Amino acid sequence: MSRRSRAVGNHPASRTFVEQIHERFLPAPAPEPRDVVAAVDTAAPLLDRNHAAELVSEVLARLAGTGPLADIWSDDEVTEVMINGPGPIMIERRGQLSAVGRISAAEVHRLVEYLLGPTGRRVDRRLPMVDVRLDDRTRCHIAVPPVAVDGPYITLRRFPAHVRALDELAGPAEAACLRGLIAQRANLIVFGPTSTGKTSLLASLLAAVAPSERLVIVEEAAELPRLGEGAVRLEGQPPNVDGIGAVTMAELVVTALRMRPDRLVIGEVRGPEAAALLQALTTGHRGSVSTLHADDPAHALWRLEQLARGGGAVGDVAAHIASVLDGLVHMSRGADGRRTVSAIYEVCADGPPRRAAMGVQAVAS
Image (cartoon, rainbow, N blue to C red; front, side, top):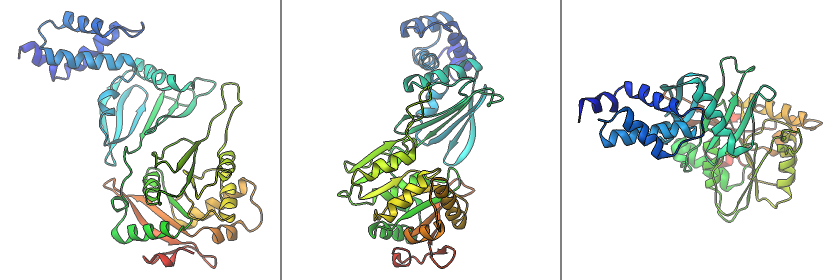
């Protein structure tokens, strides 16, 4: 390998080299690959073929809009990517945060356009925040000035390509208890703080449902993976640029009940749909499951009650919840980043939730 190859190939200076080639083609439309090849050959005629090909690929990725995310996105262990305006790119891998590379102001703006282009959504000073699903595995949130002081801010959450086994998310006794609860058609709420694996556990629970059962899944932004031919997925929709066309979660729950579900699944209860969920459980849709942001079981029940009241539920809502909900499953994340089931609780009509015995009869009604 030539001295020039070593200087450019695996050296920090290669990043500057890529940026220089990248900037030559901005802000014109993306060039043909042969044009980038020619630019690299002209700038570094002594570069060996392999390193030249790597640099061409990186320049093309940046011009396409993915920029320095190209390599990050190929790593299946990366579950979150956080861009806080120009500067370092933060990622979460195996539950741990780290900085990988940097992104320029021009690249941040181009990345916003690249991510939102296929969705038909927009973000600007009038609509400074947007939340979209990019594909079956990726959810994207973007905030721009004036609400994002140093923005644009981009947060990308990736979901596993495959459903994890219950034993990966729970101890042997807890996993056995959860399988029993699913088999006995217990109504369950999975709760925990943000990014503790609630959706992952929900997917694992649904994978334990018999293939013959019809699941109707309602989500604000589809995050659960495809779960077989018996599963139907409904996704909420925001209003269009004219402020019309919105489809709320509450409306989707009503729609779901007209689709003959064996089990109703709500990806996350966070609004008025809580009242519709309680009505669905009251009408006999046993084995329904959902998730909820909460820190402890008492808080989970209190929050569900407040959300249901916001959706129009009246009367003794707390007693109503206790009569239709069987169990609460607490997800937590340890200091090592591992997400796991920390406890399973029985919902009691005569008092606060109590830890369930690992025999499923203690929870299922």
